[in-house]
Length: 171
Image (cartoon, rainbow, N blue to C red; front, side, top):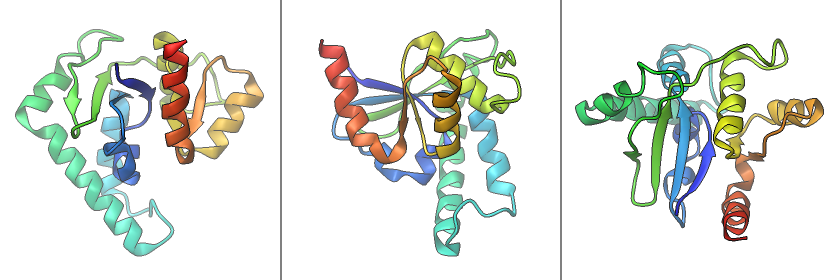
């Protein structure tokens, strides 16, 4: 059985290691994070501090968008968009990684503490009872400080998270 994490689709572009895990993993991504890829690609704001890294990440975002726009993948994504909380069929990202898109709904339950995408990540995590994987240090602290009932892992701890989730599922 593959490990599951709720995350944003941009993480696949920024952190290539997520695409080549040692064991199977499924990333559950809210549809709005796919829409955000288009905004990030067109934005003049840098995503990374180093210009070469920024160009690389924007190129990877473009590749990810192109992949999602392939007819079969686009069809899979569209299947979940008519019903709130519906999930798409899995979209393969390599031998061990896949993405499932979820039509999550932001119901503003976390008010001004979290932005709409963060809220969707939290609600998806709670609904599916799977951890969040993020690089947003501030968000992790707001989750902890607010006592939000989710498990969250920093992306730098991805290997540990994979091992930890494996341990949890086997006990």
